Length: 328
Image (cartoon, rainbow, N blue to C red; front, side, top):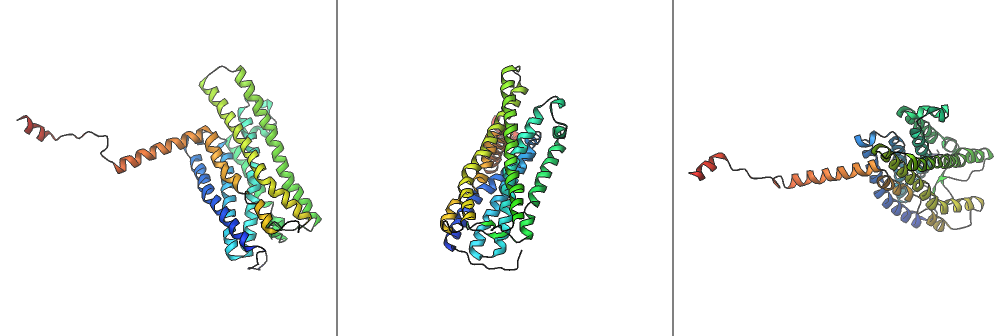
């Protein structure tokens, strides 16, 4: 990154209101994602190995919102270093947030398969928690490293969309890298998610029609269906809120003067919304998270009640000496 510090924003007014809107998103979404992370550490949630994938998704969503929150600092200071760091953060954690649902679908499928011979040998380690941790580790290694070529060539900054990210790519080699290691990986992650989502759907249909009704199998089926609903939301919401910005950014890379910066920034106003919505999707659809949250709220209410009204609901016991006096 260069030593240049202050760079004039092409439209300071829109930079300010965009920063304020993103700050509101962050004020709601960051605590919600922290809540998911806290619930993931509780006993009722830790017993499910897939919570490792949910932890990664919640952390990446939280860090996207933290990166977006720095847009208000950029609007106030116009420090290009803030814009560069913000751009790296958004690219890293947005890509991770969109890649990790494939991990969730894959690990849930592997967890349901009873016979190892039905799985490819490369998937056998995912039957254990250590294997799921290793898979998440590999995904995060990719996520933390794929922006290095753009950082080293000083390609991070304020792009034609009025957005802190990857600026104009003039090198054919960088274009090829961008298409393979960003677009290609995201497309591959969606394909993997779709394949294993279909496998989960087939398993759920088969299980619901043939299994004997026991509490354990019913709970497994209910959890799988809820995870499927969660995966649908994790894929659908980014598609809706990212699509306008992606179309405009693609058009601006072809024709930089197609629209004004103010108009372009209108299209990125919804960018952080999927990362605000994701934690609420988790809390709503994943029963162990929902149940644990309800239990914590109930305990908190009881604690507050006893703290404020310590004698509420207890019987006043009369001392024995007073009882004897009354009898006399």
